[in-house]
Length: 394
Image (cartoon, rainbow, N blue to C red; front, side, top):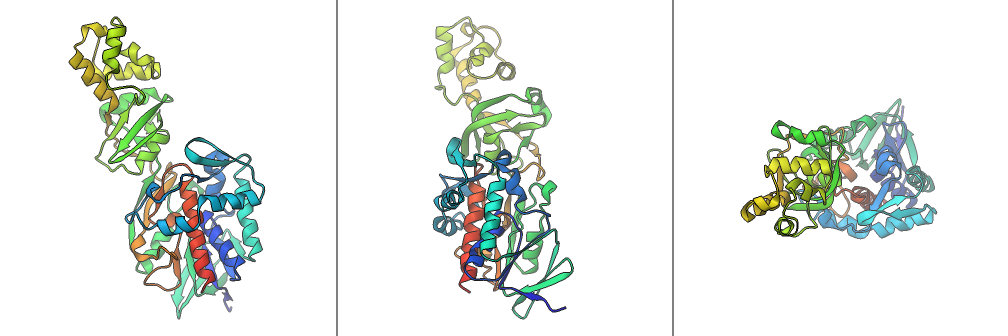
């Protein structure tokens, strides 16, 4: 049977793939969008508690991790958060800003998926869902077999993401395909993921459900948001953020009292000499956490009985409590994948492989990982737009 012919075939009907397909299709290209899932945009649908944290107004290249920290600048600079907001507004989708520039739908994430599908429809994009694809390449054409059909095109876009959240069908397909074409892959790892504690630190698991605002640090990165103790270790926004920077064997530092001055305990001793450390902490953090930290520091009795040196040491420990995670909760609990197709082999302008004409990689499949809070969706929109524009010029 003769293959169906297209200008471009896009593998992956997620955020980046749909954006790329819509842009290229609306500029006159015949586009086929394929996904092995039975519905498009599965990660969009579950994000933000079903309301989709679709972008962040504070998007900037320094809020992304990559072996090449400059790679994302071009795409992010040419398709901005304001551009996507304008698209959302054009469809009359109501939204609101939560903390730290995070934008969510007032209604449902389904509205974002419906918008992207409508954008694809405007461009006459052919969509094939529930079809696993296999790829062959020769004579300048990419031949993709999906189900009982075969299609060919001079351009192939890899938008299948990474292995984070395998329960919705996420796999490492993009990396296997990239390696086949000689592209390097930065070792994938879970990112924006809870950290697990073991050994002596398992006592903190007894605090499961307790949350408090902290400053969490890993390497040179620091985030002030909530931390949550779980039955396995540490989670919450602050922990998810630093997890992307954390490496096995390293520590995570937690400032449990980021709003207090370094001499707050000495002041407490002067003002309330008969109080205990646990009681002094209880004024600022949850009682169960206060008791656990006080026990861990080992200061018993009333503050007036403690030396200033001991209290100063306690305050410093509380401002930089070191945890040594023994791992993460893995791809099953990770919001995104860090690592991926190496940016050294891609054009930052077009997302096309430098050594394989017509092969593009976008979105989470690429070694670009954003902070928590809409940054990864903005990378999907921007990289998908960049590739779509490049396709429309070929």
